[in-house]
Image (cartoon, rainbow, N blue to C red; front, side):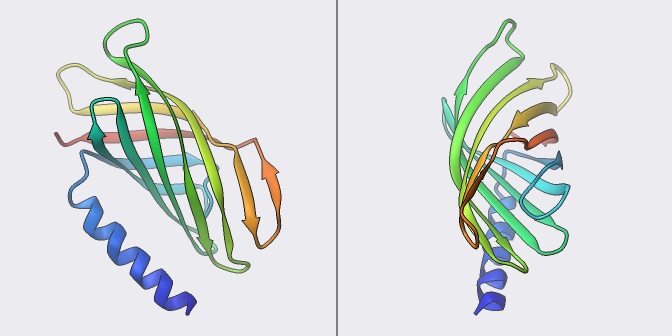
Amino acid sequence: MKKTMLLLCLILMSASLLNAQEIGARFGDISGGNVAVDAVFGSSKFSRVHADVSFGDGVGVDLLWDFLYKPLGGEAFDWYAGLGPYSFFGSPFELGVVAEVGLEYHFQGIPLALGGDWRPFFRIIDNTDFGWGNFGFNIRLVLR
C-alpha cells in the first residue's frame, strides 16, 4: 500500500512540475531530508500553491497554499504565509500539517527568485507533536 501511494504521489508531482511557474531547490529542514525539489504554481494574483518533494531516508511531500502579500518595501520583495498538509513516506510514516511564513526576492531582468522561510509543523501520525525550528532557503528559476 505504501509503495502504491508513493508511486501515485511521485507521478502526480512530476506531472504538476511540468506546469510550474517557478522551479528550483529548497535547502534546510524539510519533512524528508535537507534538500528538496521546490515548485510554485500560481492560482491567483494573491495566492499560489507551493510544493516540495524531498528525498533522504524516505520521500517527503509538502503541499502548501500560500497567500502573497506584496510588495514589501520595493516591488521585488514579496512576503507570504501559508498552510497545508505534509507527509513522509519512510519508516515511520508521518502525516501532518505544516505552516509557512517567508520572504522572497525576484530579480529584475533575470529569471531568478531567492527566498527564506520558516515552517512550523503539527505531526498527527505516527506520533503527535509540534515542531517549530524548521528554516529553509529557496532558489528558483522563474518560468512565466
